[in-house]
Amino acid sequence: MVQLDKLYWDNRYISGSTGWDLGSISPPLKAYVDQLENKSLKILIPGAGNAYEAEYLFNQGFKQVYVADVSKTALNNLKKRVPEFPEKQLLHKDFFNLDLKFDLIIEQTFFCALDPKLRSKYVEKMQAILKENGQLVGLFFNVPLNDDQPPFGGSKSEYIERFTPHFQIKVMDMAYNSHPSRSGRELFVNLQKK
Image (cartoon, rainbow, N blue to C red):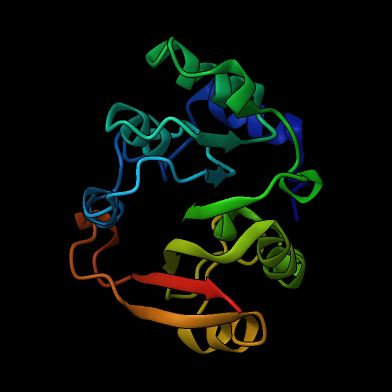
């Protein structure tokens, strides 16, 4: 398997090898964000990449939006598009080394980009950095994908098994409003920290 380190991800963004990149917030996450009323939520988007979700949230008046990515290039791409995005909320670090707490974490193609051996650690870290009653909301692939490089697939049964010890599953259903390239392949998930 390829080494999924900072160099790997920077090279993907520099070369434009970002087939997962929709160029805007995904329809299911846009619909979710559009119904949020509390603009003071402290929100994290881990493995944010080009961070279209952060851009959308910020432009909708959410000012406590943080993005974390190991790729400086990806973070710079967001800063170029949204110059007023606060520098201190661009976290150039490994998700597993974060020590802040959040009300809401938005998952968009981060879980599937991680080495599958890190999935249990991902669940534990999500629980650790969410505030009491915090939520993990996002999209997870519900299909087998690659074995040797991202994106790595998954299944609803795997997610139920992994998340149930740490989270209450509020929603885990096939997304009805996916981008056409992902239609029928992703679950919309809303998990609340136990």
